[in-house]
Amino acid sequence: MKNKKIIEVNNVKRYFKILNRQEGLVGAMKDLFSGNYRTIKAVDDISFSIDKGEIVGFIGPNGAGKSTTIKMLTGVLKETDGTILVDSYIPFRDRKKYVANIGVVLGQRSQLWWNIPVIESFKVLKDIYKITDAVYNRSLKLFNDLIDLKQYYNMPVRKLSLGQKTLCNIAASFLHSPKLIFLDEPTIGLDVSIKKNVRRIIHTLNKELETTILITTHDIGDIENLCKRLIMIDKGKIIFDGLTSRFNRTFGALRTLRLDVEQVNKTLLAEIEEQINSKFSCKEKIVVKKGSDNWVMITINQDELPLLDVLNFTVKTYAVKDVKIEEISLEDVIIRTYEGMLK
Ligand SMILES: Nc1ncnc2c1ncn2[C@@H]1O[C@H](COP(=O)(O)OP(=O)(O)O)[C@@H](O)[C@H]1O
Ligand SMILES: [Mg+2]
Image 1 (cartoon, rainbow, N blue to C red):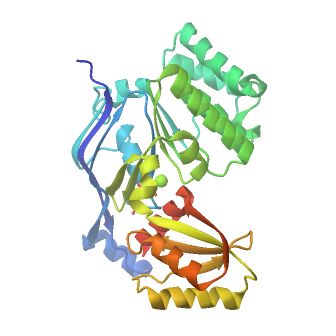
Image 2: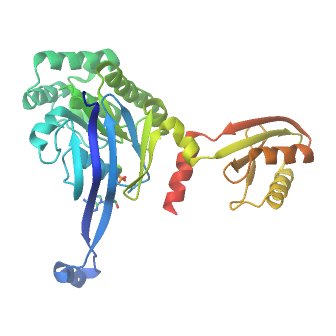
């Protein structure tokens, strides 16, 4: 049977030893001899696998271990422990051969040479990676069809905007038509129209050429538009791995109950809030706010308190004209999850 898995990560750890610095010049001298190190567990025993042709979002708060994982997967860093197999290569050990099979886009770093026109950089990459004419031309055509890449060919990289540079960088990472592309924060700092282009490229590479894509991002649009599956990491450990559509349910038993009530004002909101909180005792206080449409918004954690109980109570107590129940958005769930992690 053909193995569908293209990435296999088993019990991988990456620790960093860093010096506990002491203050001042004398401190710096002492540091040299102190041997006073502490260990940072940047990645702490993670396992997952990714199938050919998947687009997976790799998310988590700052410092969670995303970039460290990408660096190990791309053969830049060696794992402290565990095993990584990508397309039957061991990335760090085989990195010389391996890099020809992957594409890497690191948000702020460029593959292109600053002073020479974009197309000249592409030609150099063609030579370095020994890309055949057929593959090279097919890749350029694809990017020309998608984003009219030609317009940048003769511009030196230093003259490009951040967004244009990003587009050219993605093109550069794809010239050799790799089976796998790793993107670390590709849309960071870009404006909306360029973000859309970046997503269109990623989508097309995935759909038309079955390129497997692992993307780290803080951008909810990237996640909603591209990633069917999410892996969430926190403090070096994987805390969610599954369908994006299931993420909401796992972390967000949160629902918003919206009520159309006459004359919504601060006094009324405070009163509703107090009534609900005194009637139902929840661990976390229930918050009542006014929505942009002047409706009353009550956010409830379904795991703690059935929404129907609150609905029954409010309908009996107040003159409610209409009711809506909504799931909380993916963005809100992610923000709340991160906030909980940072506490
Ligand atoms: N080269 C390094 N030396 C020491 N600590 C590092 C190094 N690289 C990353 N770290 C630490 O490892 C943790 C994870 O970092 P990183 O993988 O960059 O997180 P993320 O990309 O999710 O923001 C952080 O605490 C970071 O400070
Ligand atoms: Mg990072």
